[in-house]
Image (cartoon, rainbow, N blue to C red; front, side, top):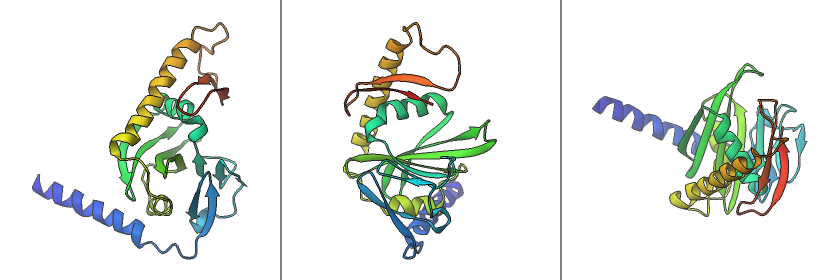
Length: 200
């Protein structure tokens, strides 16, 4: 048991050092939301890039950084409902939630890492189930979170509770989707305002 603890501790420090030791001086920068992120060379030249999202490829699971504040409730609720694996982690000093799983359509493993920088929330999507040194370095390139551990998870939990309430209300509608037909309607009344939309 003691050996296991030592091995886990050493592995943890190696991963932390890999992110901080990675040379990012030749990486390009991009602004998403209110943050500037460093982009690893393998994900430069994006398919699309704007205020809300940096998409390396048309398939957003290849590599994407997304600003999620306008849609925290709907996106986070959807992720929790549709991912079998979600784990609280700390990445480059940021509290985070790591979603990962196998996509039966893509036939590949995908990950999404939710974290905050300043007062804003973001996620990074990439292929695989491990939080790679490159992903750690991207998170490390952003501002520290304005929220402590309790505040960060309280905000996400509140948004998820709002999602469940709205989902229960929406499920009473006659036109509510009854099967897994690829979309989910939502009404957002979370801490970030009011909106209505469809997740495809």
